[in-house]
Image (spheres, rainbow, N blue to C red):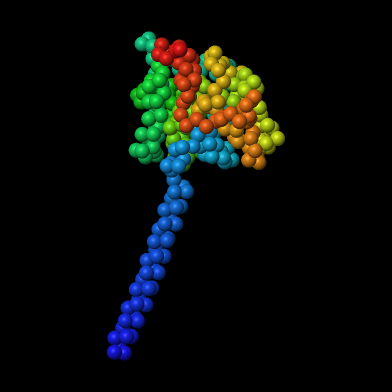
Amino acid sequence: MAPVFVLTIFIAVLCSVQGRSTGKASFERSEEDMELDRTSTNSVEEEDFSASTLIEKANRNLGERLGETRVIFGDIAVNTGLINADPCTARTCKWLKSSDGNVYVPYVISNPYSDRERSVIEGGLQTISASTCVRFLPRTNQKDFVDIQSQAGCFSYIGRQRNGQVVSLHRNGCVHLSVVQHELLHALGLNHEHSRSDGDSHVQTLTRNILPGMEYNVEKINTINLGTPYDYNSVMQYSRFAFSRNEQPAILPIPDNNAVIGGATQMSPIDILRINRLYNCRKQMN
């Protein structure tokens, strides 16, 4: 009986060791999975975040490396030397309108994107086309076009710039419907809502809560508002905590400080109206 007893004990110990080993391997796999979740380009949870939250998160360290595009107001690319001026009020920045009443904007999408990411980007372009007279079409040989690339962060120039103009949608954090809409609305000519020329009547800037050196991001500029009301629900409106240094509001809605602001996950009806008025679209001009 003794040999049988010893054999039984040996088998039990072996199973216990294997169980602990299997448990450890399982634990290591779950850690790797969690790491992938943390570094995922577009997690499920992020799809519910506003454009403001996603862009600010993706652009947190933008501009720290030599050679990166100069970006102001959070995600607006500018040419060297242009800091506070609104390019759209300084010169013509609208895309050309065709004789059929549509505005055709050629685009290219860089190769690094996955099929899913390209689908999100193209889906964002289609949502704009579905509500306006703007038609995004793959570029053939057009001189002026939008060049969608995965550069550092999320950013765009304001309006048509001539030749291939970069719209950056970095794979790690920028490929979301709301961000695609936000950046392409910049490329069409729209600016941030909180930067509107009449913004002081609708939002208060709390400079004491803004990161040092970032104050210019919430300055008002000479925008053309196209007779549209200020829109807290605009996909172009940043959140109350944008550029905050201390987790306190930096942009406060007034007179109702409790109004929801900067929470849009897609274009608002006023965003759509503004594009239609900017390009004198026949559809949905009410």
